[in-house]
Image (cartoon, rainbow, N blue to C red):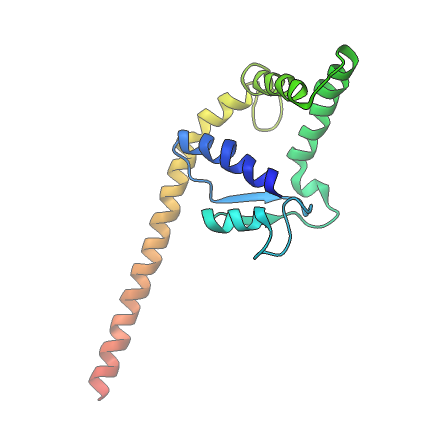
Length: 166
C-alpha cells in the first residue's frame, strides 16, 4: 500500500501536474495494495488527502480493466521474458533501471495500433488528448455551476412565496 501511494506521489501526480491536469479519479483492482480500512490503509489515506476518488473494478472481472490487463501481458512478454533470458540481474535496482528504460521506449517510441492510439505512441496520444481533457473538465465545471445557479433560481421563488404567505 505504501509503495502504491509513493508511486502516485512521486510519479503519477507530478506527471499530471506537469501537464496541468488534476488527477480526479483512479481505477484499481481490489488488491490489498489498494484497498483496506479507509482510516488506516496508506493508499486509501493518500487518496483522501489528495481528494482523489477511488473506483475499484468489479471482483473477479479482469475485463473491467482490460487495457491494464493487456499491458501486464505486454510487459511480461516484451520485457520480463526477454530481460531474464538476456541478463542475470544482481539487484532490483538493476532490473528497475532496465524496466524504466523499456517503459520510456514503450511510451515514447513504440507505436501502437490499438483502439486508442491509431498508430501513435501512448505519449503522442496523451499529448493530443490534453486539450480535449481540459475542455471536458471546463464543461463539467460549467454544468455544475449552471445546476447550482438553477437550483438557486428555483429556491428564490419558493422563498418569496413563503414570505408572501406570512
